[in-house]
Length: 114
Image (tube, rainbow, N blue to C red; front, side, top):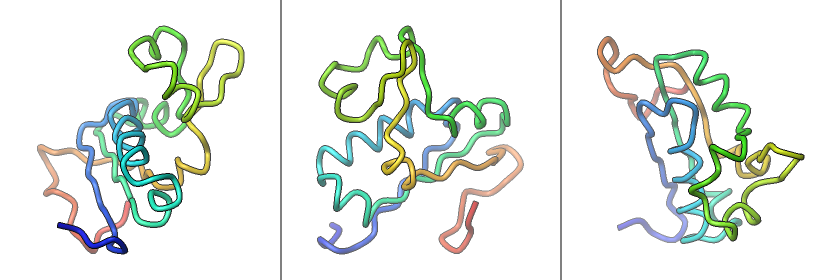
């Protein structure tokens, strides 16, 4: 069990265009509160596909991609610009996207940064 001030590190392998990483961020933010989330959480999201990672880094999703997200979470965690929803910038700082091929590379070590 983590202490109240210990860091929390999550690895989202095969993150594709980022939906899982942002869902994990919302889940942890709900559980910890945004202040604690921003101070303690780092989510490392990796994929082999550079195009998917580019989309993930933008954190912008259309209405069709947002269909399964409850309205309460959309309002709390996304900014709506016409037909695009963008994940809040201050919370995105806790998510680091990088390229990693699970077939070729070993899992991320504690010392490695993306």
